[in-house]
Image (cartoon, rainbow, N blue to C red):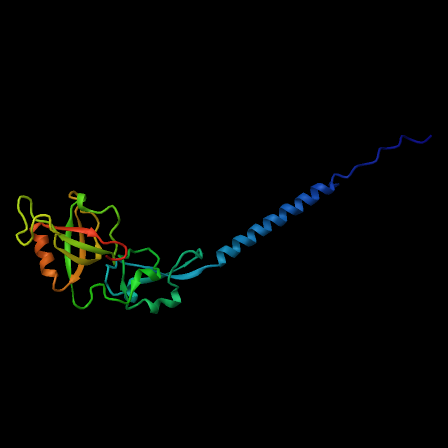
Length: 214
């Protein structure tokens, strides 16, 4: 007499087609992610950096500059390391700080104080500082305001005050405690002594010129 028939065995390794497809898709996605990551890491650009403080108008030397390799966004305008010679010998158009990238707009081949000009430092109290930031190259007017309780003997009442045209070369940060900002203004050499005298007497005010310089 034959014995009982054993039920068929089901292999533990059997996989449903859907599970296999999902596994392959995850592996493929992971591989693509790694590929993108490796591509981003490898797509780096050598750019010029600033390694020490450079004041406005100072001539740049190779000792002021360094190099960094970065994954650079195309929107960021930075001087490429292989173009460093193009900026050495130019002047800083703005104050440069260590650790920052150098952009083409931050350097100039022009002297910030030109031939026939003088530099007049002007101290501004917090209430005299325009809300608009003062930046190098900005055109301003220096206005003579008679001291309180006096009148300008050279002018009739209601007359237009004396003014001197100028250009911002540098503006300092606010001094601790007083908040005073010192602005270096380039004026015509013939106007420099007059502007300095107004500043010493406390009768000088600085106003921003219109965008067209008028």
